[in-house]
Length: 163
Image 1 (tube, rainbow, N blue to C red):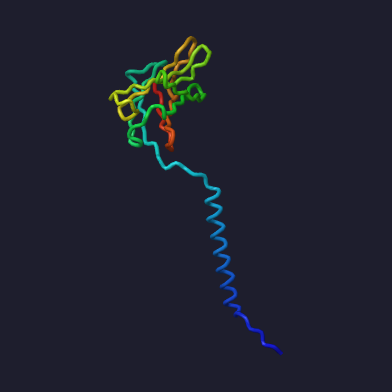
Image 2 (cartoon, helix red, strand yellow):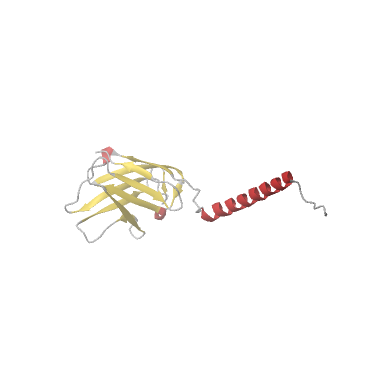
């Protein structure tokens, strides 16, 4: 009879476990890199504070405090209005320097940037004014809000209306 030689059962089990661990680790890293979507690392750090003495039910002022980014071109800013249970995104117009959802309806929103330090950038101390323009427009009320986001940054700054 011929004596067959091979690895001992303990060495065989260790080899199978090691190969399995290497295979599972490789599949895990491949799958997580394939299925994870890239995310932006820039975080928006901004607060919007309503100025009650300058505001009324159709014209609301918010002061901006920003730490990240410290300043940004206004064309990168996105503004939305949550009013009466509905959310409306406003579109920026470089020709007027305002945001609006102006349609052919009887009323619309308009957001105006007040550059208080005249550097032509949105930064701390500047103001955003939100107006309701037109006939038969519903007035702002407490609990309505504006939302500011910046292209290329994670996060949203929300300013609440308190009338």
